[in-house]
Length: 196
Length: 208
Image 1 (tube, chains in turn yellow, green):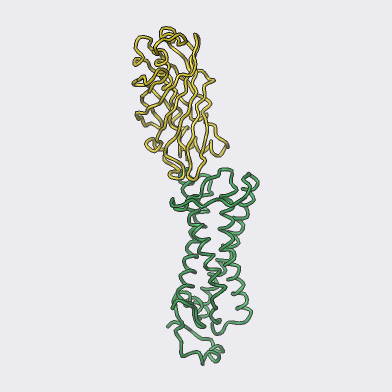
Image 2 (cartoon, each protein chain N blue to C red):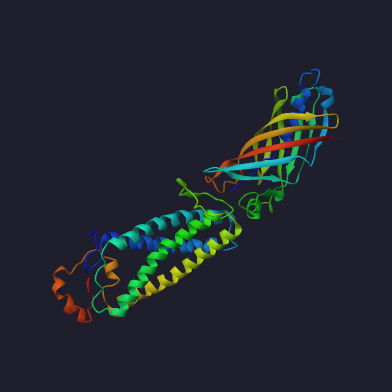
């Protein structure tokens, strides 16, 4: 019924870059300050929702993931992110749903242990916003996906973003349950990066 | 002839009978397969949704059938039927018609009470709302058990019903089965002779 196939942590990296690239005003951290390499902290939240006909839907999150990103201080567009998600760690409101998501109907976690995202381009779209494009791989299929990143907080040691993306699951072979359940999986992530 | 007559069933009754028979047997087959634990999960999900759509169809057909059965006359028993046989047949039909309605109703309750809260998207055309039942594990388990119990009871009666029809066709040689296959009261001049015919073992009856 649901196939969250996005791993948008990578998207966060570009955000970081963007944030860094923001023009400096009195309060804005300087690009040089934000530039650097970060690891995605386990306190980050990777949430998804799949709408269902008639309202409501299936919401869940992933407990296990990892990733890193680099913010290029001189040229935000050269920033990059890599993210890996472990679908076996999916959490939903009840066990039957989790088992179904892990099964061959959706993630097929037994055969495909990870979902990965690797950025290919980062585009700054506002003082605290960026769009990250990259290759998302799930169930052995790789497609270009896009995430919108917004910088929410940062200091010397860490940086935080919210990342949103709408991923169509059918192209990844996860179309089970459509049209009762939407083909579009909405991702809503809170990503925190710790400076490496 | 749409209506029943004294001698046989009309097209409405016959079409309802066989439509519901097909639905019930198909639903039992899907229901059995989809409950198997080793089934492919995606196929299982689809089978559940097909089961629900056809189940709602069966519910509607059973409702029409029950109303039709209440308002429409029944043909007289075939000649040669003993009073006890007639009572047994009549009771079986009454229970079958009731179960044909209650079983899908209980199935609707399962979908409604399930904590999975999966919408009933009737043939992917229209969402049929859930019944107002509490959604909990115990409520779902209760209705699932009730639904299965009713279905197995109905299956047992269907077997008896079909065996009786075959018995009448091949052992008794009367018109019981044939008049559910062919509309109309063929022996229209036979009315006067009905009583006398009823006394004899009549081979064939409505059909050659």
